[in-house]
Length: 361
Image 1 (cartoon, one colour):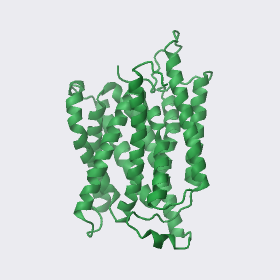
Image 2 (cartoon, rainbow, N blue to C red; image 1 turned 90 degrees about the vertical axis):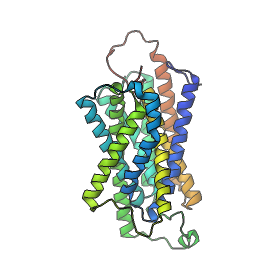
Image 3 (tube, rainbow, N blue to C red; image 1 turned 45 degrees about the vertical axis):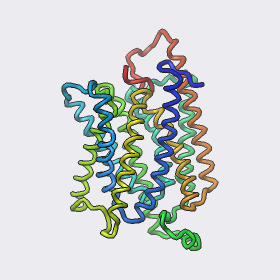
Image 4 (spheres, rainbow, N blue to C red; image 1 turned 90 degrees about the horizontal axis):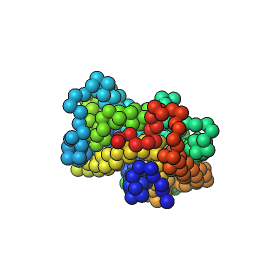
């Protein structure tokens, strides 16, 4: 059973099962986006209006549950945090991820975020947000688990072969009957897509740690989602206007009903998942939330095989096994480390904040 120094068994179970479900839903949405982009929908358009829908969905909950937690005055530091979170965590990360899905594949896109736990661990340790004791067995186990998880993610990335991904409405029998050829243009696009996805994960890791630090002063995670979603939407709209001259949806042949449906689905899904994960970060820190990302990869690979008829290679299976092994090692180490820390009376570094501990009192 999960043991917790703060909170009961049911809260722990809710956090674990909720993060598991959120990653499965992200996987479903990634596969769905394959068909959306094949139809010609502009990725930046989805970021702009999807985040507005997310803000609308989360706003009522933020007002009801967190209004008393809103600070009377916003400091310049807090405003700068809002801006950086919106720019890095919404505009840049989401735009790079969606463009990466379009150019590479949902499998690769779902594998790249598995690099985040290691990056977050390094960033948090460097900033002294994360406690690290080289003599502690659990700290060593966390490092080993993270490395195993990263190895699995890299196997998923580099043992895949670039190919054209079919859309959900494509004639699958016609696609499967084509002989496989590795076109230079396809390979270049695939490599560029991987680069976009990798860069996006770097921004995600930085903003995840910044988000945990922000919630020390701004103890309203749902309100933070609303603020960053609105600001991120505006920044993305400005980016699209500067780069493309207007806010373009895509080809004029696109169905209005389909566009509205895609925006609503993405906005509601992301809103619910992000709000929940933001709450989890306030309770357990960014490392625990990020370590669940392999589940998204597995969901995407399975759904791609079932719906898009994409082959699951031996490299994919090996990567999945490694990522799950790393996941459970880190969860085991974190759970036992938190439990044993409560009994420690003499802390050599009493003022070092640990992002894996609850940030809210």
